[in-house]
Image (cartoon, rainbow, N blue to C red; front, side):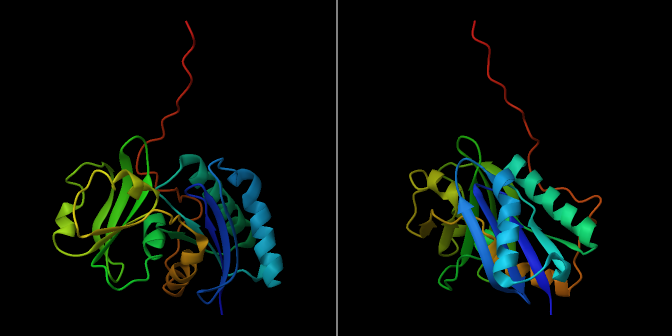
Length: 226
């Protein structure tokens, strides 16, 4: 038996789930554009543990969404996960943000599932999976235009899922494409993925693990008025 705490903070959704052998027993999440993860994350951790009547000492591993996504959100989630792993002396598991989001698609009618996270302007973070959620194309930061993803829509029915899909709906013109705009990365989908990694002893080095930012962080400051 394995108790795994899953932390998802890569986007606007602050999400925490507690899973037993890959099955979610408790979850709490809040999706807000204000990115209040620093205030909510540890409260949510306490809430799901209390709801399941499980103590920190009973946990077998901590799983964290590794990105790509918000620089600040990822730092908060990874810092919390590493701190718990150090203090409890338990393994750290990382989960691809885009893969867990893709797994929200339960339909077998699609040949390809493409999760997309909104980046800046017309840019998205995306990755392509087949119906079994195997990687077809690696993660990329790319600008959406009329030719985006056509190599996949020409081969089969394709689902674009996530916030970045909104940038595609008026740009990519094809009949072989469907959308799910409302999906956000959630700790709910991390439960089975983290348990699979736990069984395979697929752990991260707690001391050296870093989130997958995909792009360098650029600090923007307001321009001074002349």
